[in-house]
Image (cartoon, rainbow, N blue to C red; front, side, top):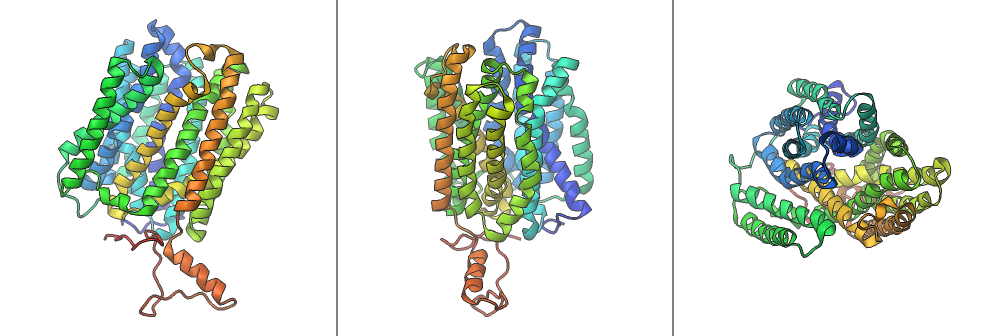
Length: 507
């Protein structure tokens, strides 16, 4: 039953398995393709431009349709939309694998992105709606850690499949995983939805949201590559900005909006997404350049450059669930403030990767510090974004947080190399690349540190934890009993911040 699953039970673990593997195929596909691009280019005898769109076509539609996917899940059922997205993604993967030319591969990659947008917000919203309040942090921590495993597996798996078989297998490998997810979801995942949601879709909001995100995404991808004054770039900027303004106006005026703007009235939700934007921009920009630096300047093979980041996955896998559980006990503020500072230290240490090729001396220390910072940060960050919105808006809250992270990464990938002086074909020259790489990781480190400072200023611990800490501090040795106005113990509440009234927990 919705909201009653426990982490340490077989039904709870089946739900975690389905949601992790469902979102995992989307995550893997966003990383695995980069390793296969040279083989795809040789197979289709194509230039760099179409290869770029093999990557960005997927990211563009994924980012553009995430809000719609979250809204559909809240209205029609998170399990239903999650399963539709998984089946859609699997079918699009088959079409990618049999694509006869680059143009059709780009088109089918765009279809894959739509499938990913349907399943990604649903995976996290299912956890939020299915588990008890006490176990949500732990469940989301496990989802974050195992999701990190999928992200790290992408380059390694891609390198192996390209070498052992063909680049087409990076798409075919999604089929058995998707089939398993569909079977497990149909048997074990409980259905949940927003009971107050209208039984229809907000068509104007959906169209304007897609146009806004697509226009702005195209602006940042193509503007840094072709120049910010190119006609298509300027047109995309106008479309993106006008659509965004119109989207906000439409959503504010509708009774049943796709994006209920009142969720941003909660300081905790808005602050958490602000921290998400800054931190994920730093991560996306820096780790776009890390494999290039390792392969071009340090002469790592594609497979070796993927393996070099595996320790991050191990750390996330071991510690993310524990981090989520700790945040549930003490509140997220400390971890969300300290974690980005540790990530910033790891990014600053990555500057040494440009000084030599010895992995254990120049790369591993940075990777270990960086991974530790992520383990401290990611689960509390994700859980706080979800818990600061009412449960009935879990799907849209997940979509907003995912979109913020992905748009931040896209913008950083487009802008950070330009800021660091890595332009044109300079990335092919080791000395020029290393110089720009040093600047890029230090800029990213400063951004992450700013994210930690923002969290320290804006994030608040839930009211019941603040009251419990006050009661414990004020009466040492006394049994803990936090009472409300009527003298009865206060129930545990994961949805209220100390700077405003608690949000409705729904039914």
